Image (cartoon, rainbow, N blue to C red; front, side, top):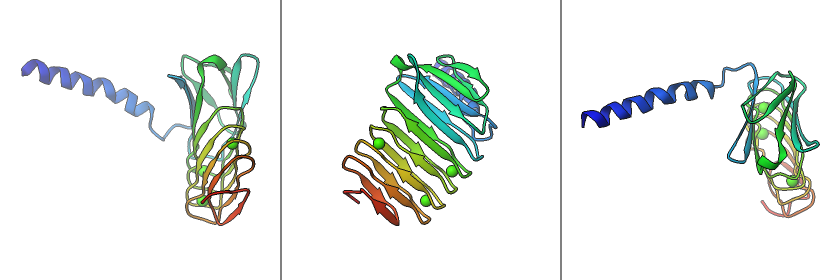
Length: 177
Ligand SMILES: [Ca+2]
Ligand SMILES: [Ca+2]
Ligand SMILES: [Ca+2]
């Protein structure tokens, strides 16, 4: 029993730095690639993030914040990070507070949380599953079967091509809601 307790305690202590590094107080945008998921996690400022395809890389650019990549990706300059394209099969984007702009210029599926603020989301050719929050958000799914949920506020959803699910006050190109 004593051995089990010690093992448990060590596990809890080891988890503490991970919890701290995932906290919301960073004045940077963290870019991490792990198990095929490219995660972009920013703070409470007005981010302007574009995700696009380069030569053998997925390019992440934030016009308004400093990017910090994990070991799997490479920092090109303070605003730009490249990640190996063959290792990425999906994107996860969380931009929190502020009036954010997120543009997905890839064919990767995306799960995006826009947070509080009047946010703008431009989707790619695959599935974009977008969740707004308080504030009037404008979400464009473009190609693919997208899910666009503005939550509270006066939101606008443009489903584009595909069979799209929209939950917004103003909707165009939305087959389902
Ligand atoms: Ca926001
Ligand atoms: Ca899409
Ligand atoms: Ca909203």
